Image (cartoon, rainbow, N blue to C red; front, side, top):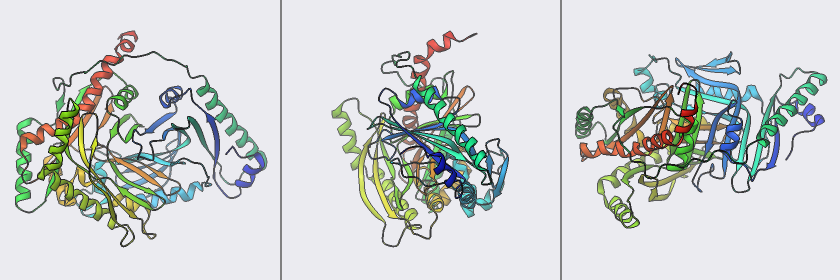
Length: 509
């Protein structure tokens, strides 16, 4: 595994327009955070995991220097170059993504990492307006002109192997296809120099940076937290959803509230704290235009790995106990709660239906049913639904077949989403959407954008929902949304205290 020779590169240039260069290093003295900080000017995402069952768990991925963009705006999907000049547009995301793959003509490589390059980005919850035909007719304009899907194709991907303490650098070299050998020599030498520069900057990483002592047992308070709901209105809307359930419109709808906080810390500082206080299967930091997205999601949306499809429904929640004994009591109570179990079974069926729409006949299975997953502040009931992708189905269609997750919308999905649009006071934007990578090789992994902070300027937004069913107690659902938000609000409070010395040292601070 090494960079191509000049002769190999010249030969590859006859067949491909994107040629990966691969460098591989021993990196036992480095951490992904250190590497990201050394390359922060060019870095636009960091994907990690704290779950041995996740394909991200062995690796942290850092994306440098976006080369192309794929974004939706006003029902059009635009593929842009690094200067954000339009290359082409389509009315279908699948067509635009496939055209991007055809345009890039990437040489396939064998390297032992799950993500070898492709598109990384975010799909907002509101993107359902352009994914689902029924909702598209109801929402044929996007009044705030927000980009509902936003992806980057990075020139360089860094993959840090946590088990072997090794670092892979995948640098994608673009060519037009009409270069002379002299042009190709120049491109080759520039690529090698760029890789050497990245290596040099990483090698200058300080072996020790300032140590921060996190506050112990930081109390979570909503004193300086603003919500888009007052409590009475939220309780009223829970009651209205119960009336919709009683009339047969839906079985469940997930009502959410958004919390807003003033902050002085950066998105990366929040990420550093969040990955410590709320470790989860999906950890992510993304920069999208002037917005930072920081998350610690417990729930996969959908994964496609070599035609194997997988969804992990999560529903049923209890707060964590202060002792092991209390934790065990709460776990037993959760597994005996008929309301929580009914809600979970409903979402397992929804996941089976989502996979069944795109899977080979007879391949859908539920290998894990009703297990407990424990996180920093809450525990959930978790299941796993799998299938084999039908050869006639494009991976993007499989991703969209499960979007948005039933765990953040309801059942039946479409009617639930119509009710939520009627009731919730603001558009959800990134909340309940998806963070995902779409590999050049057709592999996809994605998580639901829950336990997620959106940072714009000096404000952080946190949103959390509760699944409303026929026997829901409105007060309990209000508390559930607050309990789910606590881990992120705590992370903000901890970050503000941890990094206060940095703020005090800034000019005019």
